Length: 202
Figure 1 (cartoon, one colour):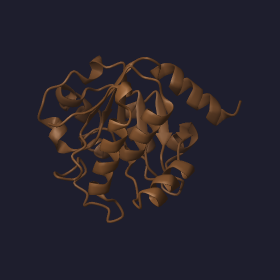
Figure 2 (spheres, rainbow, N blue to C red; figure 1 turned 135 degrees about the vertical axis):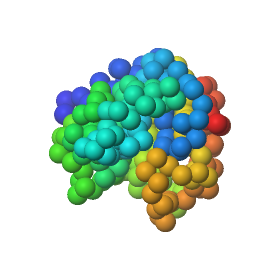
Figure 3 (spheres, one colour; figure 1 turned 180 degrees about the horizontal axis):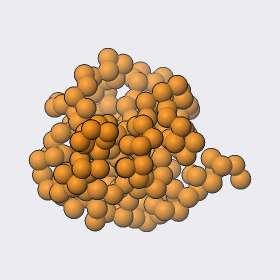
């Protein structure tokens, strides 16, 4: 068994028959109190928490405590794109598992590059070709969770398809298509009714 096969096996075992929550990066998630750490598996995308990228100033670990009422503080799976958090930030987030959703390692820092399961090339290309879109990290996280894991339920927060700003206040990447992602994600949910998936609207 290869290192990558072992990583995927361990993720599957950890998530089996559990209630999973996936958190997107919409600021809407910071307005409603939720018991996120009460889920069996907590998944986050990219930097995971607001202001975590300024860990070397006054953010970092403090931001995890600041927002835990709304988005919890535990991270079991961190989904990252090519631009991963810096090593120190990743260690503050402290995920049990890292899943990489982009092919390129150019902007992936060493800790994420060496410790991630690579869920990239074929799935990214599949969505890029069949749906004619460049999928976001969150979209690929849903693809991974629904397609590969056997869970009890999946609740999805923080996906408002760029109706509001995200935690980093970065502009929408022109390659992404919020409307196409919304249609695709709703299609995935409708076609996996028995998997008990809920897209939470806040």
